[in-house]
Image 1: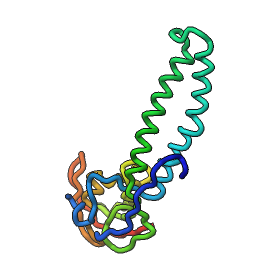
Image 2: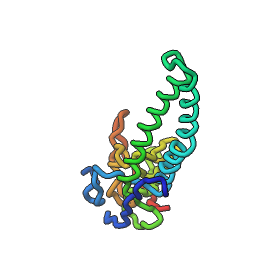
Image 3: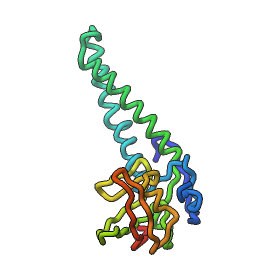
Image 4: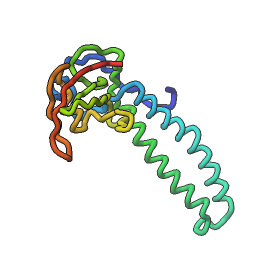
Length: 183
């Protein structure tokens, strides 16, 4: 990307996780991520480093030139915000460098693996669709769940047609895997 960020590692070999991690060939310590999720992290990094931070540096420099910094709210707020941005940039840099890229378009099969979009049917016949994604990209409202979540851990390594017991805070639920897609 040219931002001084190391490129993420790419992993296109998946055979099939601890709760299902081992059977999928996944390592609980890695930062698995989809191309879409990695692009969002890189976009946030770029916006902070090349848009917000440079503007804020100008404001802080201007505020510092106004004299007494101890009573200068622009200066104090600016310095605080710069520290926040720097912390977030450091975090993003580490997450991007440690990313294990998994492209769902390169995968196929009927086994639930990282990046799979899974259609489940519960005992009442209600259907729900989840995509299993990385920790940095989950969004339950959009049907994207972290691969480390209890629901994803219960699903990983299972196959189309399997009945799966999912333990949730409200109790356990049994679902059937109706469809597995990689898109």
